[in-house]
Length: 284
Image (cartoon, rainbow, N blue to C red; front, side, top):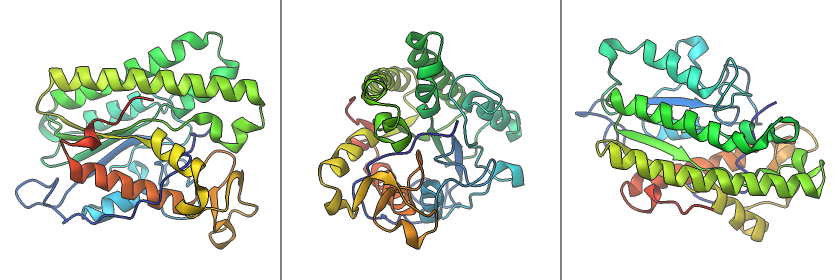
């Protein structure tokens, strides 16, 4: 099962950041390391949109090269990955990345992007015990952040989840599943916010930049036209770039290139804010 889309992104412009300044160390080019699922996968398991993925735009604006780990790069994201469980989980991605660190320390000035959880929640309809899904996902993410902090990570971007019930695939399962998806999303985001507070308290040297994707989704669903969309319910009829103009969803779960561009813009604004609102996205 592939990752849930960052449904509903406000029309946030891409904010350019000077290469090697905000996140690079001592004037060196910034490095971007990505742990994630299909929302951030740029080729390890495939590409799940009709254009550029949001992490590619973030890396480009920071002056960093970002290639799939399968090709020797620093993007470890794999389509279908969960935070907890599975051969390609974000926990296993982190283990692979950490095992290859020179001297056991993360690169100076690196930005780590850790974004998952959607697939954990999408498993709910078939899970034997849905009560542990959020708990296990948050525990796995906590362990990743703790390990990054222990290896000297400074800047870490951790977005929350949009309402997973907004995706066309989930809508097709009926209103009861949609209500379950919303409840799990809210539970996850509240738990995430509390956990990030605790990790920041334990590791003051780690700057956790938060991105409130849930609220971005609310804004777009409230006024799609303002965000540049004419259809936020259906997947685009043909998965080609021009055919998806005006669509939020590329397929039943994943966003179009426009949505990725807007997510990248919001992420860059969160990084620019630094210790401001970008680190304190409200729990939803």
